[in-house]
Image (cartoon, rainbow, N blue to C red; front, side, top):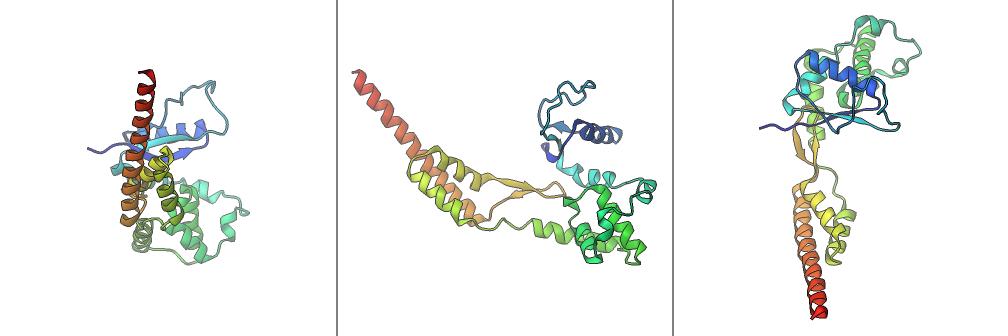
Length: 221
């Protein structure tokens, strides 16, 4: 059974309310990442410097992305000619389209419009190809980080809980792709190190605790 996973964080209550209204209009289930009173009209619970997160079912990621891309044409036509995207080269705009997950729906649609106006319209087939290439790129494990692996072993043999945390992170951490798929962040060899670090840390930590308890027990005797 699918579980709700983080989709996006919004900087203000106003932004997340608009997004939730879109979800409700299309009967798309969602969860808030915390118990913030998002719909407090008085904004009494609003906090500065805080992000408000929404969780969706993985199957709905692509659908929601498409719904958010349905920008009003009038809004695109009324954009300030000094808007920064107009200074982008064709190659930069195509890169923006390929990395759609890093940009707002508005910028994505405007990039398509600018290219079309320049006579460089991108076909639906090419957009699909760019998105597939992007998914393949994002699906690659993160670059091997020898520092954290090494630090994990050092803390593990010191019997510190930090080693347990590093090992568990390497072993279990996952990232979410734009299509909602969840994959391991690190490659298999790093996850193997994470498993070993976790086991060593757990054994030595439990041993240290047991010895302390045993010492305290003998002292009481």
